[in-house]
Length: 399
Image (cartoon, rainbow, N blue to C red):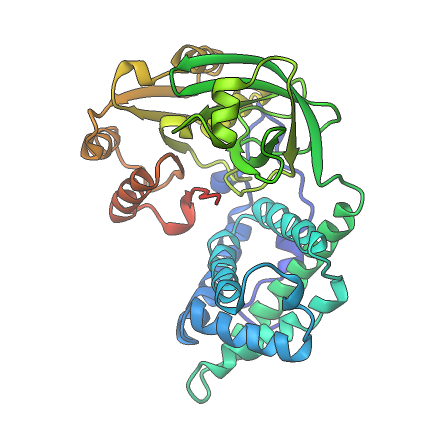
């Protein structure tokens, strides 16, 4: 052990979370000493990454080193060199933002392992990645800038990440890539928006807040991502909230031509916008069909008896656009710790920002954003400026 670097094996072990409804551990669901130790790891990783030139520079050096050591590795992965460097940079940033959230780390690297296995990557091809990452960091620093505690923090972090990736690769061999599913019900809530209830024929693993790509029979070559508004702890069904900009495409087929009994295919669940293992209070902000993944989160709170308070703001132009408010109000009624605040913006995002701010200080909350890109940008920026730490801000932008 290096003095000042926590033992990550103890912190990222297999502690069981408190049972729903029972008193949780202090503050973040962990002992205060563990929480402080993981914050120290995040500080070491973040500071060293900045000193080494930032995520993009380090990712560029890392890809070059791995490509030289494993010439076939990147040939099996999607995208060209530029896109792959960008993905590596995003991964480094995500790691630092989530290093103090062990459940998110385990789940995220497990999903990465499944995705890499689908691309044909073998675990042994990643064995050198930890050393290559440490070297990519060291090479970007001034002389004597690379410290022993930096090296220990990165190598230990990668050791655990590699194990979780390998477990994900192994699990991926026994899990289908897609599931056949049937449409149980189809409700046209607006002219351009429908809510479909779907049931896979076989149990499909996912976490509340995730999304999955969907294929319809009339366009078998196209897969379109939609959030899964449901929780696996219910009846193996979930909702798809679909808005169609036209009569064509997957969305057009689901909104305008789908009916009960239709068959669709659903790919593996993706995304990291899931409930964290800590017990921080939750701030949820939705726009339009972005309410779907947040509905899944409050449903999980209600079903499991999770006691943490949650406040959901749902922004809409008019009352008619609050297409699912009755069902969301029903869920909130079953979970007294959940509050729902409809916000009629009239198209002005400042109204949403001001309304959220008027409810108090959110800097200690875990924040989840889902909706149109402009809403994500405006509300995310405002929350960061108000003191919400970047690693407490969660959103997915599936392509």
